[in-house]
Picture 1 (cartoon, rainbow, N blue to C red):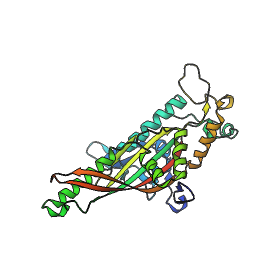
Picture 2 (spheres, rainbow, N blue to C red):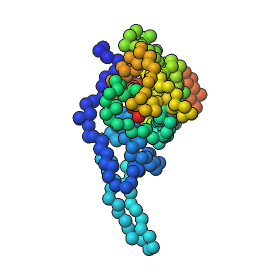
Picture 3 (cartoon, rainbow, N blue to C red):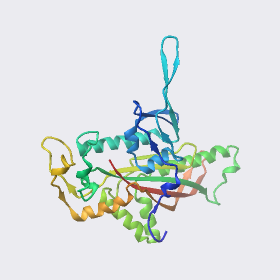
Picture 4 (cartoon, helix red, strand yellow):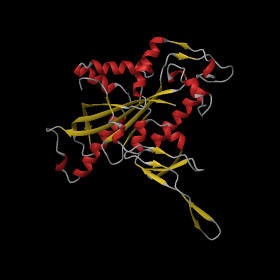
Length: 318
């Protein structure tokens, strides 16, 4: 990639849109995340980053409340509800929702964002002055374990299938234990002297990350040589609102009468990340390392571990 370190995700017009119908008394969406029941409020679901929504519903879905169906039982009626089956880790979604709740609480002083008049918002230079901003960084990693030609072949034993599975699981665990966010990309920068990638790291570290930050969520995908990781941080905007008495909040109490202090260089950096608001961007690269493993057959092996990493970067305003 020569022009840019990240590329925009495919044009949303080519994807079935996510539609939300708020009619009806019920405000909960019922999901089944890999056999685990999970209910989420419609507003909370709509507030999720675009990249996460596309993971939850890759083909698009119309989230409208199904007409209530009732079956007459012996002495009561049972309500039938619509359930959406989703191939997504419930622990990851819980991590996102928990972070968003804490972010709203620290900024607005409440778990629900207060609505302000549109006329007031239109006079402000940027939504960063009145909305909490979160940087969303997601990594999808696929790995391939290739034994050295000089090592004993896995197929030479009766339990070759077990050894192959053990090899994949052991390599996967090695990668899962590598929690530092920027180590692999920094390694790629040193190998190829890629200035654009170094600029990406610098920009993220100026905006909320630190160079030794670790993934907030990192887990292997079931039945695949794949690992999904997610990091969420509050964007450093350079905007400081005066304290609101005894109310613990970092956001403005009143848009019409706010008097913030602004760090102009920091705000300029934060404004660059607004390009990724509702427009997630991706970067893909290959990474190779060598690991030494001894499997249950007690033969030491030197494994070439290839990893294809895809980063998705997005800014979320809540």
